[in-house]
Length: 136
Image (cartoon, rainbow, N blue to C red):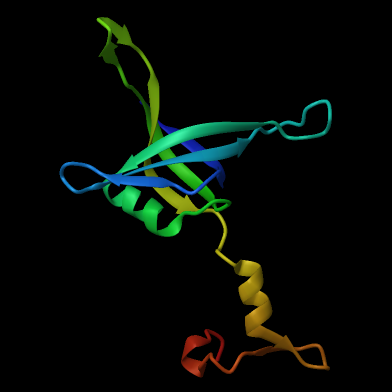
């Protein structure tokens, strides 16, 4: 079985190009913190380069930007090729699926949509109708 899971933040804007079949190929890097602190009290960070194809690459192109926290499910593949008559061996991390780990602008939306009255109760913004609220 060849399966990896990463949780981390996008390091820079993904680079997307299109293959001969006009399907997207996205390359992006992910900063992943380790589970332990070093002697200075900081979490060491590893940086991984990933590539995705097709629908996953389209998702990356549309929704992922620098700083976004994501969960990646993928695999490691050997990428062997010939150069000057010698075989060059390298590994490539393929992102098969990508999911958000936190809501985009969650803090901004919370502050913009909820207002507090003087009595301490939160009031729902006028833009929400009774049909949208699950407790009405």
